[in-house]
Length: 226
Ligand code: DX5
Ligand code: ZN
Image (cartoon, rainbow, N blue to C red; front, side):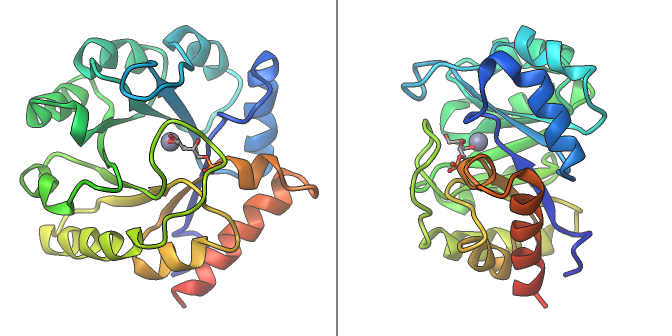
């Protein structure tokens, strides 16, 4: 895997919320590929975070894509607002969507890229029948709701399963992992088949800054797949 195949999507959950526009610019300058917005509604997960207006206010500050990780119970109602806010990729949770096929079709029909996230206990097979709709599958490597949690290494088996499902589908689908990703843990996820990596605390807590953190994660991800 060359380093250009690896994509780094920093979660801005740990950011200083009073400086989000500047933070997005600094992350872009540090070489990240996307900005990962953890949208939480206080119901699907206990935390409450970014509304569409906040994301929209940052949209014009950078060129790189925005992805909205919707940890919400009413995704269908909120999707149009996050697409209008400038999110290029919309990630919904399999567990929160009664009509997942319809929800992913809605994202596509609105002109955004559809993606589905799987909580740690959710089997990969649950997305078998939407492989023709998704452009990305996100395997959670923590239980959603908070940053700074420990990486769940047993999820690497699920990453391998999803990677096989993608290969069988014959479609160009990104495989993203999210939670506890750092230079130390990214290798296992990358070797299992992931190519997009969300990192929050590993990026924001690196004493040597964003550029160092991003290149460290990228280097370990690339070298893990040869
Ligand atoms: C958790 C979020 C993750 C989290 C990542 O619900 O989906 O994106 O913020 O943060 P770290 O990298 O610190 O685990
Ligand atoms: Zn996330």
